[in-house]
Length: 184
Image 1 (tube, helix red, strand yellow):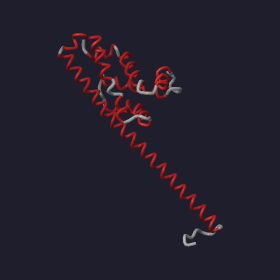
Image 2 (cartoon, rainbow, N blue to C red; image 1 turned 120 degrees about the horizontal axis):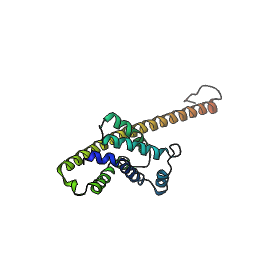
Image 3 (cartoon, rainbow, N blue to C red; image 1 turned 90 degrees about the horizontal axis):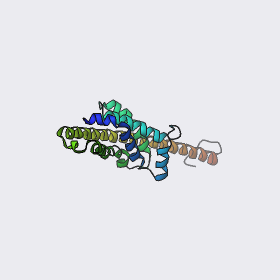
Image 4 (cartoon, rainbow, N blue to C red; image 1 turned 135 degrees about the vertical axis):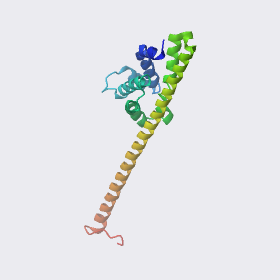
Protein backbone atom coordinates (compact mmCIF):
# COMPACT_ATOMS: atom_id res chain seq x y z
CA UNK A 1 0.00 0.00 0.00
CA UNK A 2 1.22 3.49 -0.84
CA UNK A 3 1.08 6.28 1.72
CA UNK A 4 -1.00 8.47 -0.58
CA UNK A 5 -3.68 5.76 -0.66
CA UNK A 6 -3.58 5.45 3.11
CA UNK A 7 -3.84 9.23 3.52
CA UNK A 8 -6.86 9.36 1.24
CA UNK A 9 -8.57 6.50 3.09
CA UNK A 10 -8.04 8.15 6.47
CA UNK A 11 -8.44 11.77 5.37
CA UNK A 12 -11.27 12.61 7.80
CA UNK A 13 -9.57 10.88 10.74
CA UNK A 14 -6.29 12.72 10.16
CA UNK A 15 -7.84 16.14 9.62
CA UNK A 16 -10.07 15.59 12.67
CA UNK A 17 -7.10 14.72 14.89
CA UNK A 18 -5.13 17.65 13.50
CA UNK A 19 -8.03 20.00 14.25
CA UNK A 20 -8.27 18.60 17.80
CA UNK A 21 -4.53 19.12 18.33
CA UNK A 22 -4.75 22.71 17.08
CA UNK A 23 -7.69 23.72 19.25
CA UNK A 24 -6.00 22.10 22.25
CA UNK A 25 -3.58 25.06 22.05
CA UNK A 26 -6.41 27.35 23.19
CA UNK A 27 -7.55 27.81 26.82
CA UNK A 28 -9.94 25.07 28.02
CA UNK A 29 -13.22 26.99 27.66
CA UNK A 30 -12.31 28.31 24.24
CA UNK A 31 -11.09 24.92 23.04
CA UNK A 32 -14.34 23.27 24.11
CA UNK A 33 -16.40 25.90 22.28
CA UNK A 34 -14.24 25.65 19.14
CA UNK A 35 -14.65 21.88 19.12
CA UNK A 36 -18.39 21.72 19.71
CA UNK A 37 -19.87 24.70 17.88
CA UNK A 38 -20.05 23.83 14.17
CA UNK A 39 -21.94 26.92 12.92
CA UNK A 40 -19.61 29.09 10.85
CA UNK A 41 -21.27 32.31 12.05
CA UNK A 42 -21.29 31.45 15.76
CA UNK A 43 -17.79 29.97 15.60
CA UNK A 44 -15.85 31.62 12.77
CA UNK A 45 -12.47 30.69 14.28
CA UNK A 46 -13.31 26.99 14.54
CA UNK A 47 -14.91 26.93 11.11
CA UNK A 48 -12.00 28.79 9.51
CA UNK A 49 -9.45 26.56 11.20
CA UNK A 50 -11.17 23.38 10.06
CA UNK A 51 -11.70 24.58 6.47
CA UNK A 52 -8.13 25.87 6.18
CA UNK A 53 -6.41 22.77 7.49
CA UNK A 54 -8.54 20.56 5.29
CA UNK A 55 -7.43 22.51 2.22
CA UNK A 56 -3.80 22.50 3.42
CA UNK A 57 -3.94 18.74 3.96
CA UNK A 58 -5.34 18.27 0.46
CA UNK A 59 -2.40 20.22 -0.97
CA UNK A 60 0.17 18.35 1.14
CA UNK A 61 -1.18 15.06 -0.13
CA UNK A 62 -1.78 16.40 -3.63
CA UNK A 63 -0.13 18.81 -6.02
CA UNK A 64 1.51 21.20 -3.49
CA UNK A 65 0.43 24.16 -5.63
CA UNK A 66 1.94 27.18 -3.85
CA UNK A 67 -0.91 29.49 -4.88
CA UNK A 68 -3.52 27.10 -3.48
CA UNK A 69 -1.46 26.61 -0.34
CA UNK A 70 -1.21 30.35 0.22
CA UNK A 71 -4.98 30.69 -0.18
CA UNK A 72 -5.57 27.77 2.17
CA UNK A 73 -3.22 29.23 4.79
CA UNK A 74 -4.46 32.81 4.49
CA UNK A 75 -7.52 32.61 6.74
CA UNK A 76 -6.05 30.50 9.52
CA UNK A 77 -2.85 32.53 9.66
CA UNK A 78 -4.76 35.83 9.70
CA UNK A 79 -6.76 34.59 12.69
CA UNK A 80 -3.69 33.34 14.53
CA UNK A 81 -1.71 36.51 13.76
CA UNK A 82 -4.11 38.66 15.80
CA UNK A 83 -4.52 36.22 18.68
CA UNK A 84 -2.34 35.97 21.77
CA UNK A 85 0.10 33.48 20.22
CA UNK A 86 3.84 33.75 19.91
CA UNK A 87 5.14 33.43 16.36
CA UNK A 88 6.15 29.83 17.06
CA UNK A 89 2.70 28.99 18.41
CA UNK A 90 0.94 30.77 15.56
CA UNK A 91 2.71 28.75 12.87
CA UNK A 92 3.47 25.64 14.93
CA UNK A 93 0.10 24.11 14.11
CA UNK A 94 1.64 22.84 10.86
CA UNK A 95 4.16 20.69 12.74
CA UNK A 96 1.38 19.06 14.79
CA UNK A 97 0.57 17.07 11.66
CA UNK A 98 3.83 15.08 11.66
CA UNK A 99 3.29 12.97 14.80
CA UNK A 100 -0.35 12.42 13.84
CA UNK A 101 0.70 11.00 10.49
CA UNK A 102 3.34 8.79 12.10
CA UNK A 103 0.68 7.47 14.46
CA UNK A 104 -1.68 6.66 11.56
CA UNK A 105 1.12 5.02 9.58
CA UNK A 106 2.19 2.88 12.52
CA UNK A 107 -1.41 1.88 13.26
CA UNK A 108 -2.26 0.91 9.70
CA UNK A 109 1.07 -0.22 8.28
CA UNK A 110 2.77 -1.87 11.25
CA UNK A 111 6.04 -3.50 10.15
CA UNK A 112 5.55 -2.38 6.55
CA UNK A 113 6.57 1.08 7.70
CA UNK A 114 10.21 -0.03 7.51
CA UNK A 115 10.06 -0.82 3.78
CA UNK A 116 12.29 1.55 1.82
CA UNK A 117 9.55 2.85 -0.47
CA UNK A 118 7.40 3.71 2.56
CA UNK A 119 10.34 5.44 4.24
CA UNK A 120 10.98 7.42 1.05
CA UNK A 121 7.33 8.48 0.87
CA UNK A 122 7.41 9.49 4.56
CA UNK A 123 10.50 11.64 3.99
CA UNK A 124 8.80 13.28 1.00
CA UNK A 125 5.65 13.91 3.03
CA UNK A 126 7.57 15.44 5.94
CA UNK A 127 9.50 17.63 3.50
CA UNK A 128 6.18 18.88 2.14
CA UNK A 129 5.02 19.66 5.67
CA UNK A 130 8.24 21.62 6.27
CA UNK A 131 7.62 23.58 3.06
CA UNK A 132 4.10 24.39 4.26
CA UNK A 133 5.54 25.55 7.58
CA UNK A 134 7.87 27.95 5.77
CA UNK A 135 4.98 29.33 3.70
CA UNK A 136 2.97 29.66 6.91
CA UNK A 137 5.72 31.66 8.57
CA UNK A 138 5.99 33.97 5.54
CA UNK A 139 2.22 34.49 5.63
CA UNK A 140 2.30 35.11 9.38
CA UNK A 141 4.99 37.78 8.99
CA UNK A 142 3.02 39.39 6.18
CA UNK A 143 -0.08 39.54 8.41
CA UNK A 144 1.87 40.94 11.37
CA UNK A 145 3.37 43.64 9.13
CA UNK A 146 -0.12 44.59 7.90
CA UNK A 147 -1.36 44.69 11.49
CA UNK A 148 1.57 46.91 12.47
CA UNK A 149 0.84 49.27 9.55
CA UNK A 150 -2.83 49.54 10.55
CA UNK A 151 -1.89 50.27 14.15
CA UNK A 152 0.70 52.86 13.09
CA UNK A 153 -1.82 54.63 10.84
CA UNK A 154 -4.37 54.64 13.67
CA UNK A 155 -1.86 56.16 16.10
CA UNK A 156 -0.87 58.82 13.56
CA UNK A 157 -4.51 59.61 12.87
CA UNK A 158 -5.34 59.90 16.57
CA UNK A 159 -2.25 62.04 17.18
CA UNK A 160 -3.15 64.37 14.32
CA UNK A 161 -6.73 64.68 15.57
CA UNK A 162 -5.50 65.39 19.11
CA UNK A 163 -3.08 68.05 17.89
CA UNK A 164 -5.82 69.63 15.78
CA UNK A 165 -8.15 69.64 18.78
CA UNK A 166 -5.52 71.14 21.04
CA UNK A 167 -4.65 73.82 18.51
CA UNK A 168 -8.29 74.68 17.95
CA UNK A 169 -8.93 74.78 21.70
CA UNK A 170 -5.88 76.95 22.40
CA UNK A 171 -6.85 79.52 19.78
CA UNK A 172 -10.43 79.79 20.99
CA UNK A 173 -9.57 80.12 24.66
CA UNK A 174 -6.56 82.44 24.24
CA UNK A 175 -7.55 84.52 21.25
CA UNK A 176 -11.33 84.60 21.51
CA UNK A 177 -11.87 84.05 17.82
CA UNK A 178 -8.63 85.68 16.61
CA UNK A 179 -6.02 83.62 14.79
CA UNK A 180 -3.62 81.75 17.06
CA UNK A 181 -0.37 83.57 17.75
CA UNK A 182 2.39 81.67 19.49
CA UNK A 183 3.97 84.90 20.82
CA UNK A 184 0.91 85.88 22.89
